[in-house]
Image (cartoon, rainbow, N blue to C red; front, side, top):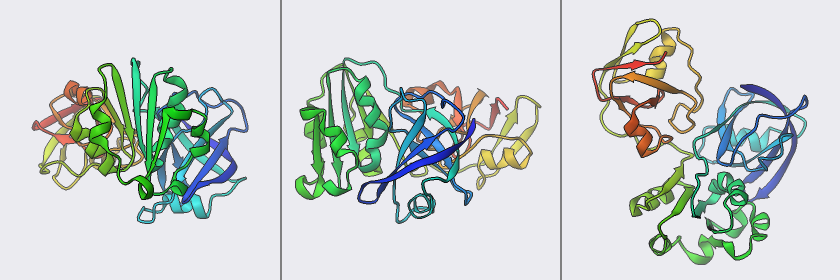
Length: 302
């Protein structure tokens, strides 16, 4: 669903971080749960995903926080330099691939702007949770005043004051029944994954490194029976779009989940950053923008 929303407010949250409050002039917005994100369709044609970090109970407005990415592709620069209060912007979503599961207790680990999807989870996590929040400097860490109301449940660890997060010690104390949620830069996520907590949930803002060789294969479109060759240098998404098949897509990096498509036959080679390990084993869906095939042919629900 695409909505046209009003940028009601734009405010500086921290060094290099601005928050947008987006409101629907015509009525309530679609409901969302903590962990969800929306796509901003920026006027220069760029589409970017940002986690919702407001109050899920407030159906009148969405809030997102945007970090300026000096080496990005222009989306964050547009938000910081050109988007202003009073502008209108198209928004898709919300979608959620980082939902809060039921657990006895929670450990949240946030790095930098990775605090955004975790922030609304804290009021839904009951009473037994702890957040460890790291950043380059205290001034670069958004929402510190808002988080301070939780007292000693939140541990702030600016890198210039404390060094890197001591993840081995932190995760060594995790008890059974604890769900671990982590969001932040890729080195943080990779380090947490390497330590292997049992109930781990991560969200990536950037794509994984490409996994393995790229071979040619075929896709069969179940709706029409058409068989399309997918060369080694093309994605499934590119091939089906060129064939005139409309597929919703956004990031084209395997991070947003917009192009998720059902798999009716064959074995996908999952290369996205969205599906969990269990979902990959089920092979019921795949992301057409980056994933490929382990079998000579895939049958897609298209």
